[in-house]
Image 1 (tube, helix red, strand yellow):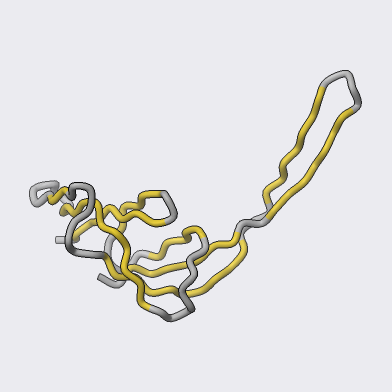
Image 2: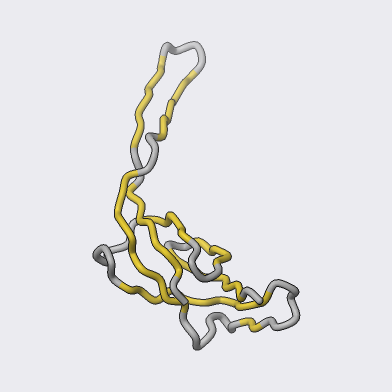
Length: 102
């Protein structure tokens, strides 16, 4: 039976299981370093064995940093009608790819 966890990183929450690969906001750790993520809840496939934290569980989820990368370019445009105002800018977010170990 597969055990799922709800983890929190970068102000966001993700549902993960062992061997999952996630792309999250940039983390300060180096590549191939093992990190611990805050665990909010754990449950199994059928939903029978559920543990909820208040707000976190004592058990932490372990993950390995695979690589740091940049995401796809995002285009941001500003426009004001009838005044000939147009601005287009963009940016590429810094991301980190992690793999859940345990």
